[in-house]
Length: 385
Image (cartoon, rainbow, N blue to C red):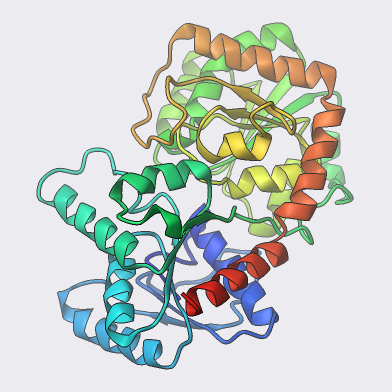
C-alpha cells in the first residue's frame, strides 16, 4: 500500500489510511505501507501503528531506492493499493502493469482535484500523475460520488469506478461517551456549536466566524468552540477581535486525538462549512456520536447528510456542489445569514429524528470494520479482473 502522506500528519486522508491498514491487519491480512512522509513522533493520543511502514522521501536522490522497494514489494503481494491519484499511485500503476499485479486506487482530494495557484509546468506534471494513476489502475475506489465525478473526465474506462466512504471508529465515537466534568461545568447553560477542522480556506471555519453576530441575535446564549489549527489562524483571530466576538468564540487549538470525542460530545450542533469535502471523517464521527450536524451543500457532505437532509441539515454557502479547493475568503452577506439561521433552527428544534437516523447510518454503514470488508471484496474482484 502507498500514500504520499501519513502519520504524524493528521488529515482525513492520513487517518483513512491508518484506520484501513489497522482493520485489514486485525482481519488477518499482511500489508506494508510505503509513504513519502518523514518519521516523527505520533500525535498525543494516537494509537500505535501495528504494521510495517517504510518511509522514503520523494526526490531524485531517493527515486531508485523508492522504485526498487516498490518493485520488490509488488512481487511479494497479491494486490497493490495506492491512496491519492498522485506520484506514488502513478509509479505503482506502472509497476503493477509490468508485474501483472492488480492495482487499486482510493481517491482523496490530493491529485484528483486541481490545486489552486499551481502554474506551468507543475500543473501539467500533476495532470500526468493523475492520468497515469487513474488509467493504469485495475479498480478505483472513490470516497464520495463527488470525488468520482471529479475523476471521470480523466478516465478512459468509467466502469472500474466504485464508491466506498470514509469510515468512523465507533469504539471511540459513540453516544455513551461520558462528558468530562470540567467541560460540562465550563459551558453550563450554553448552546454549544463545535467545529473540529484544520483552519484552512477549504474548511470554511472563517465563514462561521462571520455568521456569529447574526447567530448571537437568534440564540443569545450560544458559544462557538473551535478545535484545530492551521494557516488561517491569525486571520481568524483578527476577525474575532474586529467583530468583538471574544466572549462567544473559544479557540482551543489542537487537542490530543483521544480528546476529540469529548469536544464533539460537548456540542449541541457540529458544523462543517466547507467548500470542498470528499467524505468527511469528522462528519461521520459527529454522526456516530448522535450529534446534530449542519454542513455545506458540497461534495461528500451531501451524501453523508442525505440529499433530503435525512441525517442533518445542509446550507448553500457557495454556488457549486462539487468540491473546490479555491475557497473565497468572504461570502455574500446573505450566506452568513443563511448559515446562522440554519444553525439556530437546529439548536432550537433539537433535530432528534435526524440525529437518530445519522447514528444508525454511522453504525451500520460507516464503521471501519465494514469499510475494510468492502475493500477486501474489491481486492478479490480486482484479482479476478
